[in-house]
Length: 316
Ligand SMILES: [Zn+2]
Image (cartoon, rainbow, N blue to C red; front, side, top):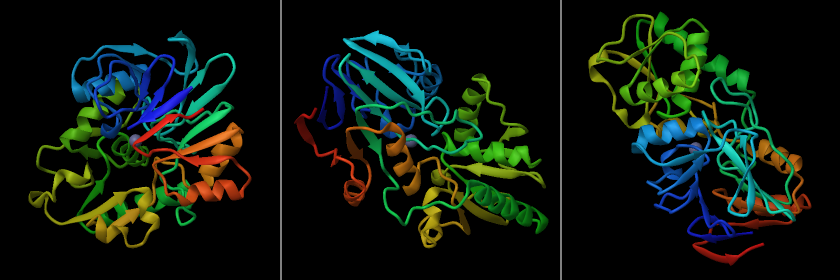
């Protein structure tokens, strides 16, 4: 049903999945840069299509809205919400005998700006397992949100500028919505603001936002991506990263920030297990995570295997 050649390929339609190299036909689970390339033809949700084209210019796409199956290349294909960022989707492929679910990047919990994940059952599960280590158990989401709001309010009260460091696509909009919903207006670095305009065109209200033009008015928070530099002209700042890696206390030194808040758009260790239980697969293939996660799943009784060596022939 699939094979691996520097990336996942569904055999019958020769459909490459989340390939970062140009392909004749590709499924794009979401528009983060390591999942896209200038494909000749791409299947994705309408929201991902807009974000993909925002990043790479006009490209041919076939829209695959959530929960609406299409018969394509000998398979029935359905996109299911993945809860990771706007438009993010899992792909369910069915050939009449067997079903395969590819999660892409996902999280099960709530998001302020992405549809919550829904996981159908499948015979074969290919799961993205970035946080597949027991050290990566995230605190309750509300606790991370409270921490973020407390740090931002304390910084404002102290007369400094809060700078929330978050990726331009996904996390940037998520922290913005959390702040504006709490009455805290946000200026966004250009790269975040441009993506936010796509979100708003798709009907996601981000609240009171403005583009950053070199100045931050009192009472406002700046949201900027990690690669945007340090904004010397805005004066005294407190930098706060929003990332799942914050569960590791040392991450704030690595990220060069004053504080790190564990707000993630990936499933943590416990959610990964919950996801596998929900799908109830006969076999699980793990990608992107530590090898030890495969052992954890085997100990729990699953037929689990590692996926991602450069070339693995027909696998199932
Ligand atoms: Zn991603």
